[in-house]
Image (cartoon, rainbow, N blue to C red; front, side, top):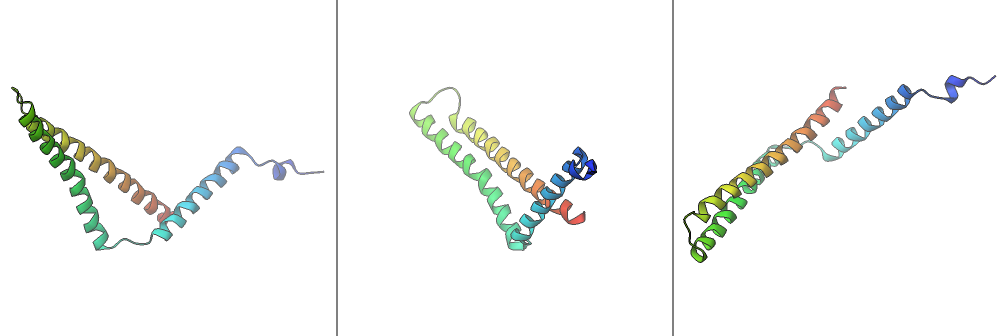
Length: 112
């Protein structure tokens, strides 16, 4: 007589196996990346600064050009400077949120 429990794993056993496999692959990715040092953190701060500054300056430059070509009652420079600042902040916020989630995933794997 064949034992049906051994031949037919339950759904909970399958999901447990998938979860263990996912955690193992995250651990392997974290080991390949290695620990980040102080210079990595400083570089990331610089990257965040540039991601905010670049669209802000480009918006201001485009605004200056538009103000010279098409003067009007509203300042293109101020408008596009603010738009560039908002876009840069949103980009930096999204990037920081993604990095934070990666760090939390890696730390969660280490504590389990």
